[in-house]
Length: 334
Image (cartoon, rainbow, N blue to C red):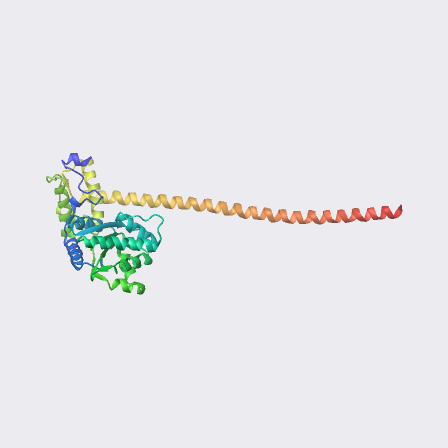
């Protein structure tokens, strides 16, 4: 919609990680430097962490595109809650090895043979684990054990752990001490500052064919940075809405008032969503209360039935005994 109105070649603030839009900010440049340094070490672990939306996945794509695939065999895994055995299966699948119906020892042997084969061909194996904060401790420990594979004193396997801040917390646990000792480089991505936020927005606009239509007032960048806290994904979301608003209002200049209007709309939507959620929760509570009342009533009815049944049984027993006594008297009279 707005891309045609502003003569853009593509949407500049799409949420998908397109490496064409990689912005080499100071923090991302330093993170890449740490990752490349880790590669020169050729073993152990490289850890990169950051809040959601700080550009970790984009960083991985940029790294992979810059590597010489003739020297490195790369596997990329988006982790989930997988145990050690499932991890070995995922690694096998990532590198095209069979794994169906195999036990752990067979999987390990096959993986080690693959590592050795790659080394014989002059390659190193690199596994990049995205969303690594989801890996349980036993899976992390399995990755550490795989890092023990070596040939002629050289490591055959290296792992990059990319994840949210919880990953750093997990690696500080006492039981992770052995893995922590194998970390050769670690870096935490920080949000963009005001100047970087401005440059980031202009960079993405220019990548999309922006010809200064619409123009952005300088103060608008400060407002965007303040609201998004410099998180690239949040910046993308807000700026996409701002351009849509500009198209609907046919704006040639994006100023602070336009930014604030869009922010207010977003806040209203969030408030409405919260209200709807609370409303549903309230209704759910009423339903729950009604069900509880019905259960109590049923329990009471069952107790009353049991009491009535006990009384009826006692009366029936008396009636039977009385009838037996009458029969006995009748027989004696004969």
